[in-house]
Length: 67
Image (cartoon, rainbow, N blue to C red; front, side, top):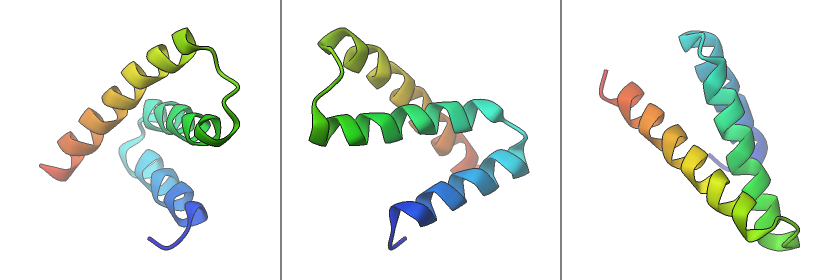
C-alpha cells in the first residue's frame, strides 16, 4: 500500500467480500484516531474507547488472514 486512499479501498473490498459492515465502522474509528494523532481533538476517554474498537478491528483482520 502506498497511500491512505489505497487502505480505504482495501477495507471497502473487505467489507464487500465479507459482508461485515462492522469492519468499516471499526476502520473509520482507526482512521479518526489517525487524524486525532495530528490534531489532538479527542478527549482521553474517547481515545481509550477507540483503542478498544481498533483492537477489535485488528482481531477481525487476523481472523480473515487465517482463513
